[in-house]
Image: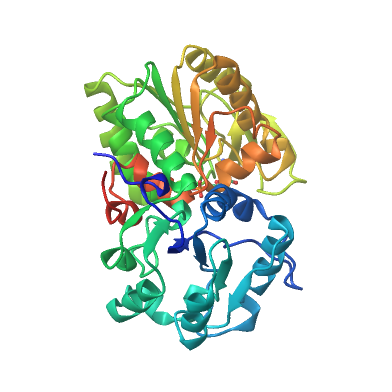
Length: 393
Ligand code: AMP
């Protein structure tokens, strides 16, 4: 069964409530420092305008407690208005009297942006009355906020109860890219997992081990797996609460015939900072007073060999402390190999997406997900609240 999308509705002259992700980064003066999230929402907004819909946009921004001007969506209204070269109405409440009045006055082809959803505590509580109020502003509900699809909030979940609902273009693309890779991958299917926290990726590791041909592990996560195998990892970051889990996953990989690859050498240093002198270890062991920072050259070679033949590659989590220049080489080399393989390459959101963009590979991979937490949930095989409530075709 497929989720309905924006194109399945006749939106002409209809009020369409669109949940977008305008949670943009800002500097101390409230200037938007990266408008990528606004740009990602444009295909859906432009489509609705071209079809003469009355567009009502809503989003959260940051983590305000109650009404707090610092978290207002006004800067977004200004930026969006500049980008689209059109006036955009702004409601200074969320589903309150100003929103109701401005939604009613909206003409076909016009846009209204509501104030920050999280000014209302009811939003995150998925309060039914608040969901009804939001729904009463519109005739159709479109969810285009993939980055919030793992959240069960009024604007991502509750509101869909009360309106015909479907996915916007960004949401539809994310579902298509991530779900297809997981449910119907071209093989060899390779997953690359890195980052710091094993605990956040337990579900992902379990689910991927049922599906992939090769699982490559790097980043700090690798030290927990190496320690589970009895390898000395020195002062490296280890998640001691998950050693048992790592042992069971190593056994699971064997049982399922998954080629599980762990680092065979490392770039190590005394302290986690840019000034600490780094050296390369000879093998997988890390001396007592040193910490693993990145995968070593032998590991890069081993991983590249496996990646070369990949047809589907999913990647979540950097393979080293990529924020420090001298420790981003492993991530960079593996990224190059992923691109060179020609595989369908899907990059999870969050840090991995930043690494890929910072290293200049944005347009070289098949898809970079806009949702960190949401993409991890999909890789776990979980159903996302923001998707499951949408109508099916
Ligand atoms: P996560 O949020 O779990 O994906 O973790 C991302 C973070 O993992 C990044 O900030 C990286 O700097 C960090 N990371 C990757 N490799 C290492 C490592 N060897 N030691 C410490 N932190 C690491």
